[in-house]
Amino acid sequence: MAKFLTKTGNVLQIVMPGMGSKQQTALRSGMIKSVFLYEGGALLLLFQFYGSNGRITFDAPFDIRLLSHDRRNLPNLKKPHQRLAIEIRCIDEKKNTSGFAPGNNATRDDA
Image 1 (cartoon, rainbow, N blue to C red):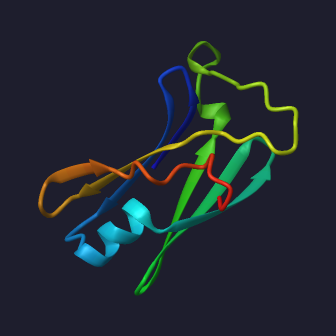
Image 2 (image 1 turned 45 degrees about the horizontal axis):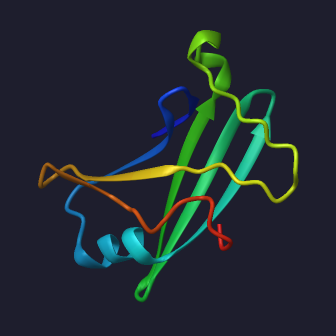
């Protein structure tokens, strides 16, 4: 789930039932690539996390029109190399545990 451009920050919440150690490693320290498809206020974000045993792909739809104007925080990104920092939260739904992927954020050069 993508919760972006709010006053509380930009959060990508990933929920996986029964997350294994390979998935945890990829999410915590693997390379991340992202693609953004935009049309008329709606955005589809695709994220791929690469680990030593393959990749994990997630999609996250986002529509700014669903967020009231008073809750929005629109950054001033005018330069082509500026990045939007994204906090990634990983939740194992089966084990009822959560964690953060501190090494992965969209400010890295490989994002």
